[in-house]
Image 1 (cartoon, rainbow, N blue to C red):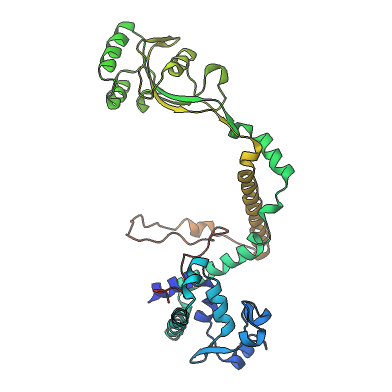
Image 2: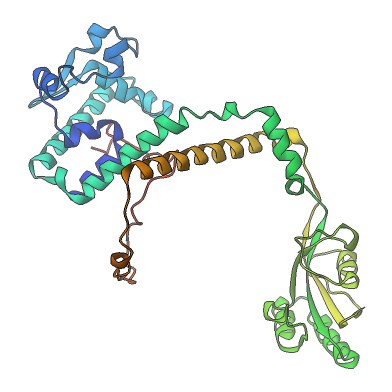
Amino acid sequence: MLRQISAILALSGALVGAAFIGCGDDEEKEKRDGGSARRSPAEEDGGGGLSPEDARKVLAKIDGTTITLGEFSDRINQQSPYLRSRYNSPERRREFLDNLIRFELLAQEAERRGYGNDAEVQRTLKQVMIQRLMKQDFEDRTKVEDVSETDMRKYYDEHRDEYHKPEQVRASVILVKDRAKADRLLRDILAKSGDARFFRQTAQESSEDAETKTRGGDLRYFSRPNERRDDEPPVAAEVASSAFGLKNVGDVHSELVKSGAGWNIVKLTGKRKALDRTFDEVRRTIQNRLWRERRQTEIERFVDDLRKQANVRIHEDVLGQVRLDTSMPTGAEGAPGMPAPGQGSAPGGPGEPGHP
């Protein structure tokens, strides 16, 4: 039952207060809320095509809990357009109402059994509240449209390497200082040119390049010698030129390639086309990236301020006494923490068949 109630919380953030605080009749609501009963948006402004008076009409009562027409309208209109289309008939709307009632019944029973005070339930409730806080204070306030054209162009100009890259290839190499030995290895490799495993094993066993032999000779991706960038792996110019001269991935250069370190057997293992993206092509991507960075910066500043106001104290000596259970039980949950901004609840809700 406990896990079911936790799932109800995660799936039904809009009704979480009803599940764990409890709802009485209108008089009890007024006492609990300091003289003003809880009202749905539809009850406040007549949304969903309802007048405020109609929105306050009682649709159903479950003991002391009331579901108004406005609350019902809000819940059904919070579903996705696809799901809303399923509730056009009176029979399906009655099914939606039955699911809301089912939710309230389970929530009331859980409250009676004391699950509202359970540590796991309280943690889930906190997660739902944090999600609401992040949405209201950061997602709704910090708009992606607020990122200016000037800032986007500045980012583009400062990160041109991300959007303009030369053609690159990936190659593997076997380096041997003795030519006679290199010749024998090349003949063996050409005889098994389609056997990628044989090339890797030969590189691991016979290559004299300590940097690449453990990787089966892999040099990773690199550009032509005259287009090489600082973040690329060091590759001898002769080896790079020979790799670009190979046509198909998997081809092995038919001759040994002489470099300053010795004789090389070169195999082409990958190709990347040149990248040249204009500002207009990446404008939206940059806008979203800057928006996310700004939002995260605001969140971190907000949390830092809260931390200072709260006078947080950490007892490092006690922290050092923690002993971790390294076993991995099936279905283990992740560590508790603040959900990322924009991270919504799982799909579904009390309006869908199969969900309370």
